[in-house]
Length: 81
Image: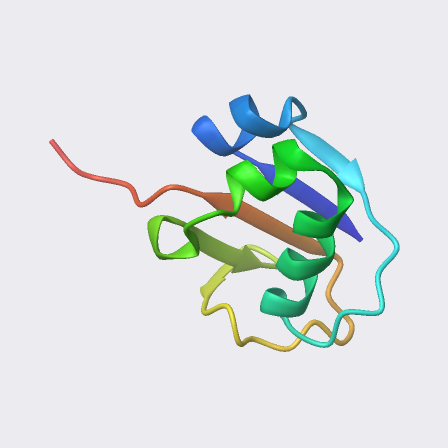
């Protein structure tokens, strides 16, 4: 699946997008897999309460299932103004 990173998440990880092969059942499982990769991922996902996630371009929660998902995007909350 494609995993996309936006704003400071992209800056911490150093990539805008990557292909990930995963056996994760939920978004949170995917986050745990990514955090275990190396320190830059652990830093980016240290506080998931500061992140939002979309699965196949639909805003969702971290307990969302990944079965059949083609894309997961991580980004900070957006503010208007």
